[in-house]
Structure formats: structure tokens, C-alpha cells
Amino acid sequence: MKKFQITFKGQVYELDVEEMGSSAPAPAATKTASVPIATPVVAPAPAKVATPVAAPTPAGAQTILAPMPGKIMAINVKVGDSIKRGDIICILEAMKMQNEIMATHDGKVSDVRVTVGQLMSTGDVMIVTN
Image (tube, rainbow, N blue to C red; front, side, top):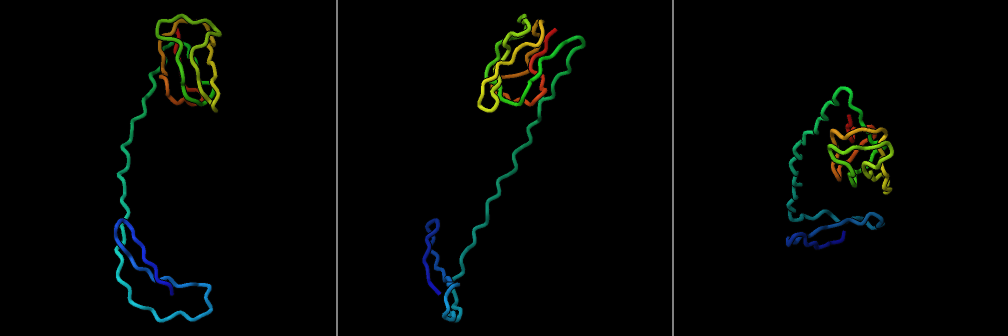
């Protein structure tokens, strides 16, 4: 047996440790001072945040969808802007690459459903046009 003294958070503890690889017989057990056991502090569970429900797309409107999962870095259009097929509407970062997301059709922006910093999944509606 070996004796060790450990200081934890200002409290001094004395420990007896038995050596496992020793061929000598272990001495008889000795009484040791009871050591207070710290109980773990359990943090309260975070409150659930309601996920925003996407507004339904109006009849006759067209949408531009996220082609891949990523994070919106910039938005180049606003409600009321006219866009042409091929115009860059936003920048989506995916796998450390900045991807230019282009308009898939001509139209007028009626709703921008993304914000800078928002995480997107494949197929999420980004822009609604009419």
C-alpha cells in the first residue's frame, strides 16, 4: 500500500492505494477518513425553441430552393426586386466554399425567406417570386 495526499478545491484528502503488480502480500486494511463525495451538478434542460413554420406559397408563385445544405452568407435581393434567370440571388456557404445561388427563372421577388447566418437544408424555400 502506498499513501498519497491530494488537495482538491482547497480540501486535503489522504488516500491509500494498493499496488497491483506487487508480489508482496498486501498489509491488512487500515481505517481511513471518510472522504466527501461530490455530487454532480445537473444543468437544467434547455427550453425548446419553436421552429418557425414556413408560410404557404401562394398559388401561381414560383420558388427558388436551396440546392444543398449550408449557411446563408449574403442576400442580394429584396422584396420588390425584379430578377432574371441567372442573377445571383444569394451566397450559400457549404463545406467551406462560397456558392453563388442563381435565379432559376425570371420574376419579381415577393418574399425573401432567408436571413444572413441561417442554416439551410437541401430543398428549403429561399425566395418566392410571382
